[in-house]
Length: 325
Image (cartoon, rainbow, N blue to C red):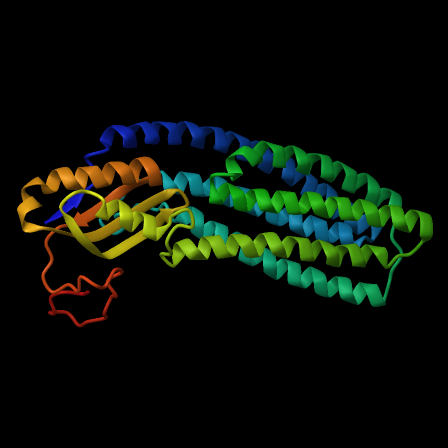
């Protein structure tokens, strides 16, 4: 028998859904304003970089373009995640936001590699740069990026999708600081190599943030155990109720960045099977309250399972065979 934890926590799930809708509305508004402000900065830095012959400013403009792209995809992903489940996609499209986070960061790495290459070429073949114009445009860009980062910071803590966009914006703010530094150096010393050098340093900063997002999003896409979850503690929770003798085929994964699911086979001693519903309710309550796992499937009766196989190694079998574990 398999028991699901969807109905036992309907009230909590409805409350969470209402809070989630309110949060999404606020995030949408902030993302829209951020997209508009960042688009203006992109055009200003693109034109300013061409006019002043600054590779650092042009590189920053390319990064800002990726900011606009990232923010737009994050905004779009919220709408996609709200779409209801279908017969083809029973979980809905919640993982779109995770996939978008992965794509954002991966593309950013490619752009960064190109910028680094151009910076290396320019360093050994320096060209004159109009430092005053660079300083002015970069300073405006820095102010706007800090405003956008402040707008998104609160939501970036708990939302991987917004976090990826936030990383873009913070990286661009750091890039603006670097451009300002290069402009000051060039103005006072005439050392034009400062422009491509700062451009390459900006690339290094960007890579750290992008790689972190790629690791987090790929972990979810590969059905990894949520980093917030200690599997040994989860196992202890399942084994805690009186009557439970063992647990196996235990799996915990993320549907998206903050929605966790669990499935397990729970062995109950014969004399306690009459209170199976009570045991499962006790387990579900603790999982939901302490570990934010609201979607569980607990199976009490299993034939052909290995009770010593905690994780239930999945075997690839042809159609027609009975059990997959």
